[in-house]
Image (cartoon, rainbow, N blue to C red; front, side, top):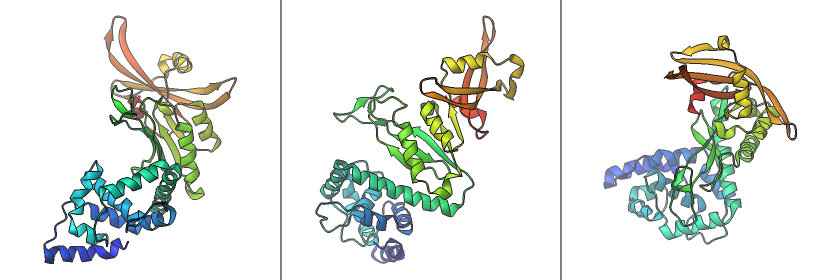
Length: 324
């Protein structure tokens, strides 16, 4: 696919012959993919053992990307793009693949985890190229989950009460892109797969970028083994703490004069804290920073709500903990 070279030609044809592209956002997205070498890598690394039906695997993936960019959420919606002559010209294709062709490709990919892993590695390689070109001083890895509502027969109920899935992602904060992820059932506990996903993402980072990385997570990432991995690899982190018995005990040991004002109606204090137990081993010590917000007057005076977060270094504002 020679997307970049065809961009200007498509514009000229659309003026002379009256072709109109209903979703122009598709063109720069596909051109960026071409500039980054995504389509070439897909053709080289993702060879499916199925009849290509006149299309390369990169052309099929590009068609699916175009469908998503156009707002489609079902394979049948590709028909609206099949009527876009300008898009076919831009892609150097006689026509956009039919829904059945794309469906066959997706089923083949879904049946073999190896194909999904290859696609994931391609995405990581492309993002690494962008990170190296940008020359960032710091790269934040955000661990976050996102509920997807779905009523397929195999879906489970999520903690929100609807059926669906609960995938978890490592997001590059500076680029706002997903670096790696795990697709999970809707009823999984929030701590599931966090450590394995963190290991995967860290292993895909080139050595030149690892020294710039730090990690951030809500309380789903408050796990002994996650913090042990980060400490062993020298990765600074900021994780919202769960208010378990050990954290509450640490909080109770903070004296009133140790609280300092952070903003109107809010104060912060900190303490040294370790996590773990004698059986699995202790990890730390770390800084445990608490945020205290005034909630009003109670029977016995002012009432407060407390939030806590583990830090290996000073890397995030105390207001981050209020998201807990």
